[in-house]
Amino acid sequence: MEIDISTTHFEQQIAELRTALDHRERQIEAIRRTSDALFSHTGVDAMVRETLTLALKVLYADAGTVYLYEASTDSLVFRHVIGASAETLTGRRMPASTGIAGKVFRTGIPDLTENANESDTHNREIDKQSGYRTDSIMTVPIKRTDGNPIGVMQVLNAQFPPFDHRDLEVLQVLCSQAAAAIEHADLLQQARKAEIVNVIGDISHDIKNMLTPIQSGVWTLQPMLDQLFEDLDKIQATCPEAETWGKDIARIANSVREDYTWMLTNALDAADQVQARTREIADAIKGETAPPLFEEADLNETAREVMRTLRLVAERKEIRLNLDLDENLPRAEFDRKKMFDALYNLVNNAIPETPERGRITLRTRGPEDNGDTLLVEVADTGKGMPEEVRLRLFTESAISTKVGGTGLGTRIVGGIVKRHNGTITVASEQGVGSTFSIRLPLRHKEG
Image 1 (tube, one colour):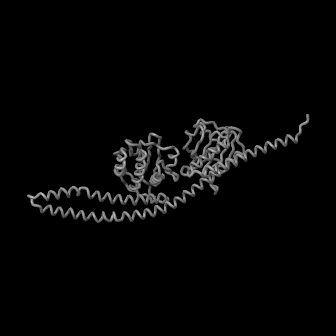
Image 2 (image 1 turned 45 degrees about the horizontal axis):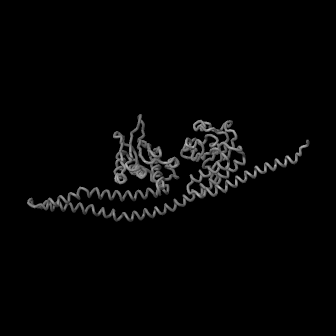
Image 3 (image 1 turned 120 degrees about the vertical axis):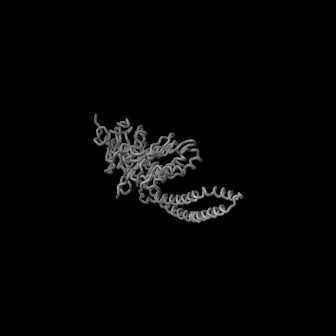
């Protein structure tokens, strides 16, 4: 029997063309769906996760990961993980030079690995830790328009059919759109930041103007009251022993004399703190901060001052503030005002997150095993925080779980700790509470 070679060849070409068209249709559909989805989100994280979700659907993949680069640790962070290992891997870090993801991040060249078990580059340690078996991998860099990579997207284990170069093109398109969306969000954020800086600058000026009469009044009132009590004492001294009006004057005067000094002092301190707080917020938004003024001081006293300041706020919400201080804590070099601000922010942020009859503990501990580091912790019995919120703390993209919150407070704390050459970490469990741990050196090297 004769075979019509030309007909068979033509049918093969038709089949290949249909396959190519199917991939192109999937690519166009991916572009359409990502365009609709990405720019409907205002948060970068939501945009990126949506891209990964669509990639898995369009490419029929079993699992996927978005790694974002963290310059401070030169690592790739498992920011978004979809699949069986999501809970195990989300939030982990690995060196930016490790595995296929690290290779793609460094080179900027997409990679299709059809058999991960035969790859010398595949990081098998991740599979061991997560219990997931990786067979095939597509890895694409997420790059800004200037070509600088900001992360990597990886999809794993094609369900059917196997990954091919056309699928890699589809993933590249998705990542390009995700990168464009990220840049778009960054530009919007920068514009909002510039606007906020101007507004904060105006507010700071207005607050200063509003507080000036209060401060001037207190400064004027202090010597007037001092003179008043001095005159009353003189009048009382002239009172005959048989008369009672001298004792009445003394009783009335003493009821005010005992309190007026600290009341006026507190009013001045509060006015100073309002102005300083406004400047601090403005500087944090602009990314400008004055260097710390290191002096030897007692961290326990700063902790007590923070709790005294916030005690009334906590009592109104029926929350207990506890001090658990190491009475043998050595004196250390730190900026007292900035460290007050850091601890104030942490305790103040914990109050609305803690239910009635809950507690917030401020704890200090001295160096262990002849070390040179102090530990200060703020622990609450609040509702805890989601992992995606915890991961973004102390970064420019920090968010808040509070309605109307900005995440600015934790960014301020992170900046203060960093300028004290310290470290800050947070452990949190939803429904149980959160613990912020700050480690500070006892001394700072000159220069």
